Length: 400
Ligand SMILES: [Zn+2]
Ligand SMILES: [Zn+2]
Image (cartoon, rainbow, N blue to C red; front, side, top):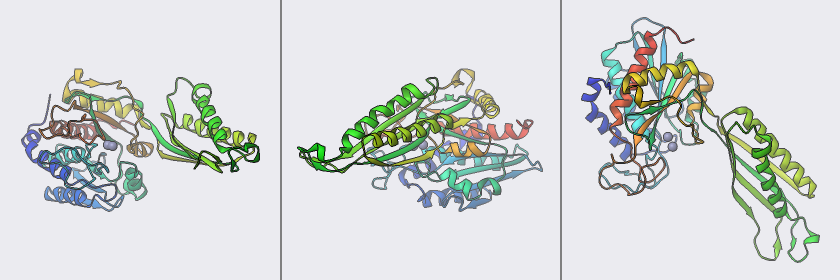
């Protein structure tokens, strides 16, 4: 590995910051202490700070030389509503809240890079270090954009990363194009007519309609969607009824849809609505259809991804960079940034959990698991990647 010596020297300091954040997790848009800590560190290192974008968001502006060139690096700061099972010294002190997705590590790595960039200044242009709130369902990235992130901080491209448990520490992975899915939720309420269960002919049974819709919807995946395009339609809740002798008035179907393209999503939503409408009509019932698009698919841009691959290979060696990583049906709000700016999002191997200290919760070291912990060995790797990426991006001819 080709890590920056000054960052390795600061590894202990970065670990301290990471563990302080881990011990004080804050949920979406409540990252007050975390944002204060980030702003205070940036200020301490002489970096001007913009606050208030996305409520608790923080941006550090690191300028050097006279070039107009610019690049953005992004980390997320929020934690999850999970009760931590780990009891090692830096375990969560906030009941029911936990850094189970490693955003504590993402924040610390980007701080490490900011500290290095502000001190060594081996670049000509502007590096924006973006610390966003509310990645876990709150669309903090979108909120920062809506609040003027890219107007106040005009950048040519933006880059993000996520730690990835189950892949070796010291490895990274990426792919051009769709890497994470869109996440969407739906709720259909079928309105029938209640009756005595012994007199079904007096009512209109919404449960039968719900069953027909649920079955027919699966044909959208198997018969309507291009089989070469991934897509998931999962009904995760069916609610209806209150007794063994009552045909209920209504029934509801709730669930999620995941796709890698907007085209597939448009098709699935349209077909779901048509099937629900026509099926309820065929049975003499009526319905309400709600479909909410949460995060769009995360689609990596080709030139920026090729560029990031070069940097990763430089930091980790060719053999430790997977350039065609398997995409995941999970979602990520960095996708909103990639709709507005060219850029690339990469996975950074977090290992299998051997890095955890004694007192961990014995469960798997997976994202969103109460026994998870970010791997501190990644701190200098991620920070070096960010520094090299920014320095090289500003030195190279523009990618577009
Ligand atoms: Zn997460
Ligand atoms: Zn995450």
